Image 1 (cartoon, rainbow, N blue to C red):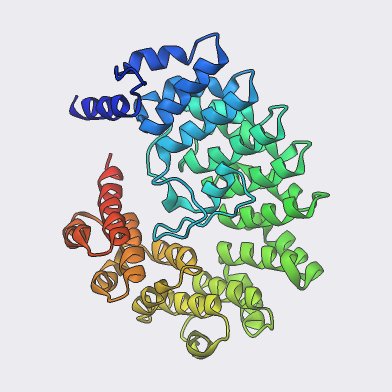
Image 2 (cartoon, helix red, strand yellow):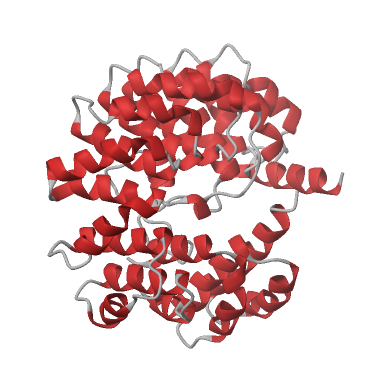
Length: 406
């Protein structure tokens, strides 16, 4: 009951009209069903500003509203209930990096899994977003598919698999590419056959997204097709996508490929090769990785090689944490550290005292994803950090650890 009272207070504070009279939550929710579009829109904006999670269910109905602007506002409102913070072009410790040309939901999706709270989404919301993915408005359907990728959680409900996979056959190539990305993020393993077919899609963006998604779902049946694509493209984004997929699957049969491309001129190829060696098992032959981790001309490749060395049993977790002072590297490094998981928590804890504020804040965010009760105690002092962004990162990390238990 106490949490409900607090949320109501927040809503009341955000919903005070010129007369000074507070608006009741139930009256705002009723206006979501009002025949006047303006009142429906106003109600959505009030709920969005208040970030009132009890409204997740009522708002979901407006994703199917006949007016595009209301549909878009409903999707944005639902996102506000799940996002840690508003997506902004400004780079922050929480790994938010938004492209100004991107839609709101697409930017939230690209910000990565740490941009959203681990909050379960009701089935009616997920179903509503999938229905909107077939909307006549290109903007509505794109916002809907990417919002699904932000809000959805693993494991994705089995009863919705078919509807999501169907989007891979949408007439709009932007939707097909979006669906592939979302399938990969949510690891919908039943999409394997559809993704393998999509590797030969007429649209390049769809082909690349489908290859990467095959890697994310660990589809070993796609190994032959991915090797064929790598050989066909040789270089460029097609080759990056194929090799990235092979690296995520990390099958031992791909070891010769990873080894042979580790010295490639293309830094994206070198990065994927190092990641592949990390997951397929580099064994004791780490000489090339050790040289690259210290001397490669590309920061992202040095990070990938350090990741591979840590996976091989070498002590490189601290090296990865030390690199988190770079805004452009924060998300890549966070993904590595989260994949390495709870065993590296002891190696990360000393970095909460790092002189660099970016390292303190970024490490705190990662610990929020992989830490436990003992990590909360280590994070508490950082909630009083002299840097407001670091204090905020530590506070949210503690909240994430607590939320993950629910």
